[in-house]
Image 1: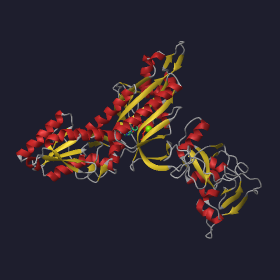
Image 2 (image 1 turned 90 degrees about the horizontal axis):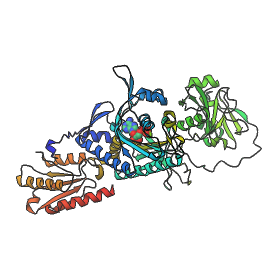
Image 3 (image 1 turned 45 degrees about the vertical axis):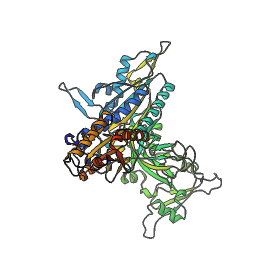
Image 4 (image 1 turned 135 degrees about the vertical axis):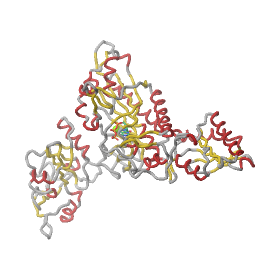
Length: 586
Ligand code: ATP
Ligand code: MG
């Protein structure tokens, strides 16, 4: 490709709305342009990156036994009504009507369509396991489309669905995909962690892992153990017990109320103010928080030095109530209405009727605690959990962070930001039962297919790659997903002899299978170098006067920026070898 003809509009400035590096650089390097909020055109260089990521994904999916197919983007409402998700999906789903008034949606995902296909076309156990996938645009009317390709409303996803005979076979497909995902992201040259995740709305009975590219721009917080394999999204993370909760003793005096009003007559508000007042530490107190779960008031108890994880809380309530409630901290008016006091004086003793009480195990492990008395400016001391109050349910609702102990091996966990580039789900029979996707076993007995689903955000992966690979001059593409592997820059195209060498090298490289561009623009070398750095070609060959004098050109790696002189006649071999090494290194 000749740069003169290449649609590659580079810019000095990024659009004002671009907050993160990948958004800025993909825009400035002329790889993407915005069409509407969360919708982008991939320009030729951007599209080449997408194609390369897709190809790596395709090879790994095929290698794992996947079969590629293509389903429609527009999906009829009826099939979503069958699983109940037409109503559950909410405003994220783009809905439309045809000329006959029938409802459709733009596919946010394809569990319904694929399960419908399998229920019609698969009969026998002999067809299983069946792994079907596609690469396609997905549509989600995100509440906050932002960060360029990171959170789009139209984005490219690879989605694979597995159909198996049972849990054991399903687990094997899951492992197969997990391994394939590791290879995909390794081949893309990314540094990532697979972490345990919360299944969220998609549900399913088995586990789920998210593949997180570690980068500061990540929207998710993850913890991982530096010593063992454990890693988890903080929404889900568990931790080991820090063994500081002492022996349970008898003989704790009966609990007593005391006044917690400051010298100004105002009630002490924060937990640490009360702890200071009592001369104890926050860890000796019970933190009591009121949440609204759907329309119900829930009092949540946790040790005073810890915080509550709302996703885990919703899951604890879901186990008890049989549905996942919407959970948020209750408004002050709701707290006063339920308890007759302000948030700073809440506690687990004498909870009003109708309020559901959830206690974290850290509270139940406390020997003797202080807490609010549910009266203005009053607290209780010598409170013994189990003796002085009994919660409706004890469940792990603790927000785990860096420094907490690994639940597997006890080492302190590390915390990092992560970009979710892929997720694998063990779905079980949730969709196959609802839609009747069954198979007949050897005895002719009918069973629901055991399912899994596995997504990779192809366009998000492109953005994530930039978040991990850039410097002050622009993108530094990993070789495997670079738009082109190499740029040939004649320093002055008006010097015919120089240009001829550059042109010759460009041709030779192309014939040798190297993806090269020739910067044939009549621009100063500085302009060309700047653009080459901004776009991030992994290799640059500069052809100047020296090529004529002593037959040498300059070869530079974008990463590291080291320059090397190479004989014109050796360029193709040297470049090919360099590509081989850089591909292997990721
Ligand atoms: P998120 O939590 O980031 O909203 P999700 O868990 O809803 O994502 P999945 O349904 O698991 O997403 O989709 C599979 C993959 O598709 C994700 O791992 C992610 O890489 C990508 N993806 C999801 N939503 C978007 C989006 N709005 N823009 C770009 N990529 C996305
Ligand atoms: Mg996900």
